[in-house]
Each structure stands twice: as C-alpha cells, then as structure tokens.
Amino acid sequence: MKMRTQTLQFFVALFFAATLSVPSVHATTYTVQDTGDGAANAANCPGSGCRLRDALAKVVDGDMIDFSVTTPATITLNSGQLEVSKSIMINGPGANLLTVDANHNSRVFYIDSGITVTIDRLTIMNGTIDSGGGGIYNNQATLTVTYSTLSGNSATGTFFSSGIGGGIYNDHATLTVINSTLSGNSASSVFGSVGSTGGGIFNAANNRFEGDTGSSTVTVSNSTLSGNSAHFGGGIDSVATNGSSTNTHAILTITNSTFSGNSAVVGGGIANVHTGNTGDATLTIGSTVLNAGASGANISNSGGTVTSLGYNLSSDDGGGFLTGRGDQINTAPMLGPLADNGGPTFTHALLTGSPAIDQGKNFSGSTTDQRGFFRTFDNFSIPNAPGGDGTDIGAFEVQATVCPQGQGFWKNHPNAWPVSSLMLGSQTYTKTELLAILQTPIKGDASLILAHQLIAAKLNIANANGTPVASTTADADSLLSGFNGKLPYHVKPSTSTGQAMVNDANVLDSYNNGVMTPGCGL
Image (cartoon, rainbow, N blue to C red):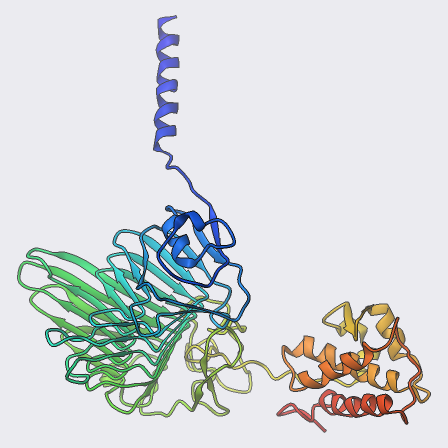
C-alpha cells in the first residue's frame, strides 16, 4: 500500500509540474475599425471605436491585430510613433489597401526589445526621425515584415549624429523581410548625406558596452529595394563594430531579390563593414539583381566577408565578389520602372530579352515571386544557367503568355473551362446554361451577339489572370443588366441598345482572338 501511495503522489506531482510548465495562451484578435489616431485608449477595443494605437495598448503576448475598415484607407499618425511592446501579429488587409502614414512628424513603429512581432500587408510611409529608423526601429527584437511596403521614410540625424536606417534600423536584432518593397527611403544628416548610413535598412552590431557580444541579423528574400539613398549603403548598410573584448556579428543574407536605383557614396546597393579585432560582418547573396543607381557600387565591402551563392546579375563588377556559378557581372538587367505589376507591392518587371530570365535559382524556397505569381516558370526555349533551375533572377518571375481563345473554342471544349459558372449582367448562369447560349443561333439578336463574346472573354480572363478589356466587359454587363430574367433578350441591332451591344461584342471579339495580347493574335 505504501508503494502504491508513493507512486500516486509521484504522478500527481508530475501532473502539476507539467500543468505549471505550460504557458498561458492568449489568442485574442482585436479588430481596428477606426482609422483615426490620438492618445491611446485600450478601452476602445473591442468595438467600433478601436483604433490601431488603442489596439496596441490593449494586446498581450500572442494576440493579433487585424482591420475592418473601408479600403483603400490611411491611418495618419498625430500622436507620435506607434510602440509595439508585446509579441503580436499585425495583419493588414493589403499593402495596396492600408497605409500607416506618419506625415513626417514622427517615426512610424518602435519595436520594444525582447519580443517577437510580425507586420503583414501594410504600407508604412513618411516616417521621419532625427536619429534611427524612420519607418521602423527594431530594438533588440525579432521582427518579420511580409507583403508590405516601406516608402518615403527618412532618418535625418542632428549636429551630433547622422541619420541611420531610413526605412528600418535593425539594432542588435533579427529582421526578416519577405515579399516586400522598400523604396524611396533615405538617411541623411544636417550636412547632407555625409556620414548617414542605411537608406533602406541599417543592420547594426556594435560594442555599445564593454564586453558586449551578440549578433544582428537581416534576411531579405523575394523583395525589392529601389531608389533608397544614404552616404553608406543606399539600399542596406550592415556593420559590425567591436573592440578587443567584444565579439559581434552583423549577418546579412539576400536571396531572389531586386536592388535597383539605390544610391550612396559608398555601397549604392549594399555596404558590408567590419571594424575591430573580433567578430565579423558577413554578406551572403544569391539569385539577386543588382542594378546600380546614380552613385555608388552595387556591393562595397570593408573588412567583412562576402559569399556568392551564385546566379546573381550585376550591372557593374559586383565589387569583384560575384564569382559563383551562374553569376553575371557588367550586364544590364533590363528592368522596367518600379510599378504596379500585379500583387500588393510594386516591383521592377523583367523586360523582354532580360538576361535575368531563367538564369537563376530558387534559394528562397517560395512557390511564388514577390507578387504572389507562380515561381518557377521555366521557359524551355531559353537554356537555363548551368546548375540553375529556370528561376528568373530577382524578385519578379516572368509568367507564361496565355493566349485568349475564341468563342468557338470554348463552345467545343467545355472540359477546358476554368470556371463552372459566370455572371452575365445581373444573372448567374451555370455551365450548362452558358453552353446552351453559345449553341443558340444568333438570328439577329444583339443580346446573343454580345453574350457569345462576353462568355468567351470572361472564360479567357479567368484562364489568363487578367484582361485589357475590363471597361468593355463592365459596359457589356451594364447593358445586359437592363433586362429582366435570363438571355436571350431579343434586341434588334438597329436600336441604340443593340448598336451598343454590337460595338462591345466587336471589342471583345478582338480580345478573344488575341489581337490585344502581345505574342498572340491572327
């Protein structure tokens, strides 16, 4: 009996020990419904008056902040920077749909030390600070930025210090940037740009205290840095500074990304710097486009280590470091301007004939490019780089050209339909009903003339992920919505409505026959 009692006591103690070891889990989502700003009031959340600053005051570790606001929308800060003090996720509706704008009156986000934060699907812009991190200051924390844009942020410096990290200041911290764009961010000082560092990102590991050790790590993948500027490191400056009693490391890894038009006196694209007796600054780069800006080399290294994973494309000599398999130097990458090429963030498209097409390797492991489009699309008419996998170099993957098909094709190949129903006008039609319409003789009915072409156009749009005839399809739907019930509507082509239907049908017929799609057509 004594042994049984001791055994029972052991398992009871083990149970309580296990229970106490499980942390309290919070999984509350606070929804921002008000785009205003002002002094934080946690009591506003949850509720229709919940603002972003209020939600940040309300959350605890493990919570999430999301948004239910009419988009596109802008939250303009009027009460200083937004401080993130808990390990949370801020989940926006899309970088093209919601902007947090400091209006050049303050930094945008300050991330407290020791926490883990994700910022997803936001635009962070016009943050200005006279020290470091105009857009975000990541202070000894772990920060992940995904599907977001940081634009127009600046670190200006003072008479006693220089601006550092216009977009993001990563201070003895861990930063991961994925599927995002940093553009037009800057670091400067009162004397111009002299001494300023890290226009897009400043990654700092230094001996602020005697005996201080540690690392500061930045990982960038499937992302674009464009038009950022500073004195050192227009795009990114990664610096490890230490003395004899310290051992600090600045670690920078860049894969499947595009750097274009970034400018600096030293390191227009990237500056990698190590000073001191111990530690190191390491740059590892693969399958990345480096297109030099107005000043500064694409890569500058001082005392650090640069490793090429291969398959990089540089408009200059890459500082002599791009000697890996598949690397191309002194080669113009042939990029389009920073623009809306689909997806939530701006990118540089690869122009026809770009030497980046199919010459890379997918080091990021992502199945999409920055925009969310399929990667890897391997054009078999273009030989891959030796050892490469047909991925396009950089953040942008050129997609296959899908030629539209005429209404006769869709009528005779129902198994190829990408959808099983369509809306024509205000009515939803099943596949069976749509096939019946396509098989119905026109007999002088303008509504059927239009419907045949509109069905084909909408199937082509669904199949090809886009259309140059959006306004025409919208007008066609508007015309059909003027009638009750389902087709046919027996509209004479000689009437004004009939003439409008025929005109739209002619435009859609041109689209369906590939006339409006480059590489297709008669």
